[in-house]
Length: 581
Image 1 (cartoon, rainbow, N blue to C red):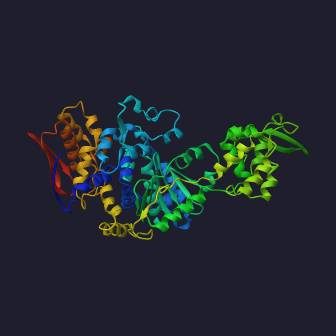
Image 2 (cartoon, one colour):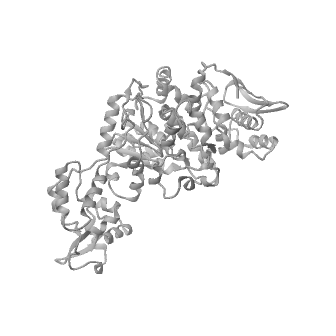
Image 3 (cartoon, rainbow, N blue to C red):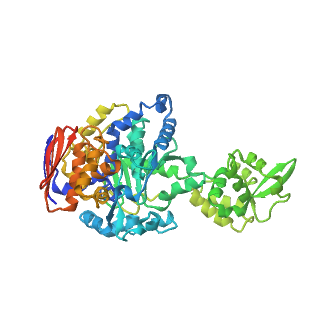
């Protein structure tokens, strides 16, 4: 394929060896972000510049934000995101590609074995901690050829909002990287959290953020998790922990740069990275007290058989198996692990208790005195021995309890430099802060483009045709938009034209920003220029040997191929000519 583009406004053309990375900033698939990790933060900056996110600040939900402490602001933001977005990982949203096609595409940048170690669809086995079924069966891929894999593309906030236009969607939606980048941008714009305190973490199967506020907060898809939540032992928390417990952190991205598990150079500021590591380690570590032990047993139900609870009833002691007490947690608001334990025990029918202590079980209540006198640091061998002594002799599984409790109370994450030496080189920063207005922030990011790659890529992630080379957008449109081609595969071109013409002349993007063909197709609307690109993508897919020409000028866009000529109105205010041969 050859692209010949004349565009107005004129923008300096990228070199040919930059095109793959810059076109990846447009489509932002999970694999593209792994190969070109600068793309992760480029989307954060694109969302920070978006009028959509700034409009949230005018929502009555955030009217009292200025009076709230940062943590309370974050809680408000979490509820807003829960109320407005769903998690989506549907194979049909952005279509399919093939393993071989992606391997060939990225061969100049990264080798196949590295991809296989870091992506579940290329052979990575970390997914066995996530799914009982084969990953292809879990995601419905088993109905396709074994070489087929999905384009899991990361959405801009505009594309996330537009999901409400799709059948079956009540809210906006996005996959985990979309949600993490949206969280990062809105933490800055809406909650006023400095970028210095926001770190993005990618693993082979997930993307989360760490926010250095109070004892730390991790964003997890739509939700957030505080340090207390991390150690509460609930089923929801166990699921949220899977990525950090079982996976290598492949990328840490920050406004000062990034560190990647594969590439030897790290651009993140070393001090910022050290702070992140210290903060995250602190978040993932707790001393052990009675509440932590009880939370631990909630998670490890197989060990509850080693424990019992006791209570005083009219001056007499009564005992009950721990597993029965935890079963009652599901029926009310009280917990076995906190100050509501006595109320939980009072709710249990009297005939469930025994008048004598149950042999071979440790009484949790008796350990109360031990923990009042001993705050156990699981990293200290002397403290571990104290705990073993307190548990010894009561249950044959007590050693297993201590070993698993140590794993529960302290996690050492696998950072991107785990086992490898990184060379730190200056990355820089655009230098924006939450006190600035949107216009000033956009101008500051724009001013940083020549020296800060993530700032330059942000305008490509935003699809801003007023200040970018158009070639990456068209390369992405023609090579990585299979949904419009598949959806129109059995249609005549006349029917395709009629369908596009019948959709609203509305872009999901403001100003000179442009939707990709599959966005036009999925959301069934588009500016005339966007519809022209969608039609050209379909035409080129059917007969790549016949040139397609798109001509856009203020007021209209035109597509020609041979004798075919189609015109649509355009309000993007752009002028140019694109020939695809």
